[in-house]
Length: 214
Image 1 (cartoon, rainbow, N blue to C red):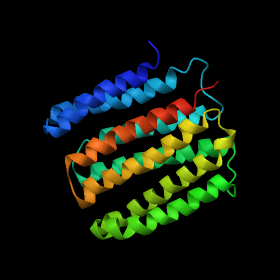
Image 2 (cartoon, one colour):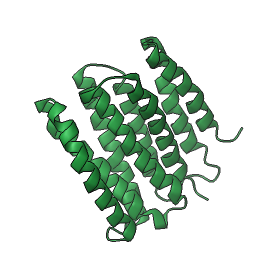
Image 3 (cartoon, rainbow, N blue to C red):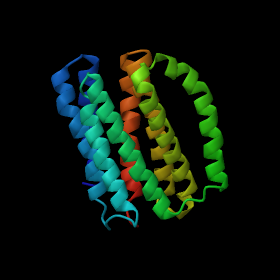
């Protein structure tokens, strides 16, 4: 079967969303790690092995899977550990894109900077007033890290063997995090998981696929 990781994650996501909707915590504990396992499988099932930046992508995926486990739990310490795990994930992805060769002043990079500035101008006034005082700095650091990662993905796309997967994965990851923040700090609701979780898992799958050697 081709793309086994995609199938694993997709089927598990159905169970995960069903569990979230019906508030079945046992189902979340079961299906969320399996959903994450799917993007790890996607990375390792590359028929020709990873591209030159692939090892860093692999490390980022592992940190992402660890972050997924941390975010299953409700205490603030678990959320903070999850935030750190995803921060390390974005650092790995950024370093991977730098290894590909980022043109920071390219048209794509500058579009990323302009778009990120526009997003932040709307996001910060909406989010930061709702964030607890001791979490403001970690959240701001994380936001900066993911924006740099997205810009780096755009700036290195011309050197990537699978540029579309790389860029779409990075952007979808950033959008999914908005729903995580909305759930944690602004308004809780199933729509956050219903939109954010599939965006996130397919973003990770796309990033894993972008590391496949042609």
